[in-house]
Image 1 (cartoon, rainbow, N blue to C red):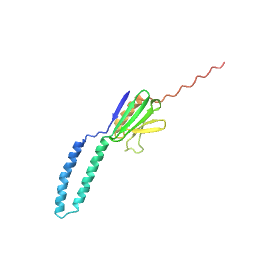
Image 2: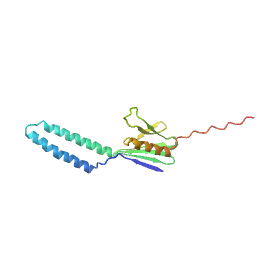
Image 3: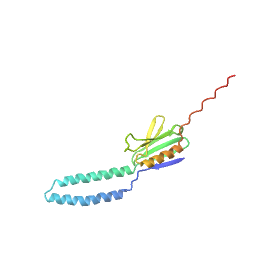
Image 4: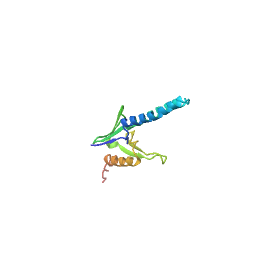
Length: 160
């Protein structure tokens, strides 16, 4: 059995995100309050919107950093699991009919898509990986999950 765990490269921890947000808050809020007290009151709501936007962006970044993908290849099946901290999804494919495909994008600047396909179902994996990482993962999975073999033709009976 082979097991892969994929996760985005997220060096920001919740503690460091909190520190960054409080640092921005400590700098921006006193300046906005001082400007409002000097008569420039429209600055305060815009500073509040700015701080709200930065906080929302940090929250989205932290949530995406918790996402995980699991790929398990055993003798019978290929299992692809996803977890984003709250939700977990799992897809099972029979190994003999499973195919791994790296589909290039129609626009050169867009990333390719790594797909696991079997029996009409398709799951994208590694959307957060770099192009090189996606290619290496495809090559490794292609080694582990060989392409379906075609059945040999039945023997033709000899005629006399």
